[in-house]
Amino acid sequence: MLDGLIDGEMEKAIAASVGGEEALELRVRLGAPLKIRTLTRYLTARLNGEDYIASREDVDKILARATDMSPYSVSDELKSGYVPFRAARIGVGGECVSENGNLLAIKSISYLVIRIPRQVFNAAGKLLRYVANFDASKSHASVLSADYLSKKVKSALIISLPGAGKTTALRDLARVISHHKNVVVIDERKELALPYMGEPTLDIGEADVISGMPKLKAYENCVRAMNPDVIVTDEIFGEDEVKAVCDMLRCGVKVFASLHGESVEAVRKSKIYSVLLENFEFAATLEPIGKVKEAVTLNGYN
Image 1 (cartoon, rainbow, N blue to C red):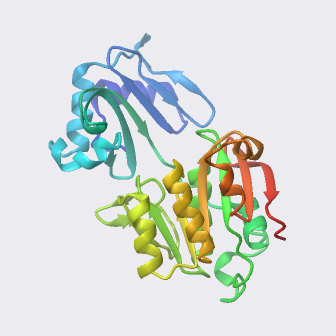
Image 2: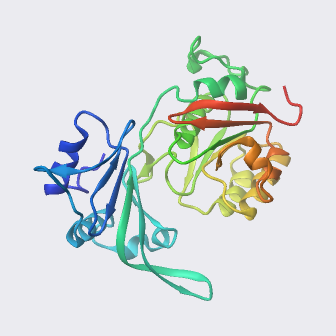
């Protein structure tokens, strides 16, 4: 997944530290130990018995490779705090330059969070029972009749704290439902389909993808031009996005979306996000990794 991004001593330290496990996240902090998160552990990378300390050369080399030696080519993404690299995403931190409240650039980048996505087939198995009355363990999606889901899909809000598998579950919902409905994936931060050179690098079934476009613009274009039955989108953030999602739901489009939160009750107490519970038909909270902790039918829907 990270071929061409990390090599040399850092690559050796990662391999020596994770053993046979798969790294899911790397935290590269200038002058600090390299941290690794796997499915079961959060650990410090070590090489030859010592902590691996990230250097300026390490940070600059990763950025140069991620941007093909041209940070200007990803300036828009940098303003949003990340850099895409093939099927991974690199969050960046450093000194910000702003004007009149608008972020112009991030310079002296010294902090990198490299998130390495993983596809988990049937990660949405239990969720499918709630949103489509479909038991994935008994029948494969591809053999369902074309009208099986015609009246059974519910709009779903997936809630959890970071790292619990919201994006993984949404991706799997898109993969299965897209065999029966017109599904459009709005992938603003390129985490759901993880496109590279215009093609998804992860399996999202027969869904159409809009990537890299701000959600608010993508919502408008999608509803008007792509005739979706279902829109799948990543994290809802802020009052404007809440309003746009609610407008789509009122138009009759089903939406699967994620939201950072601890519980349905916590969302209900939020001044900004509680309105989502008045418009979605179903909400679930997840706990690591992808397990359904709480499932709530909303607004009297069955």
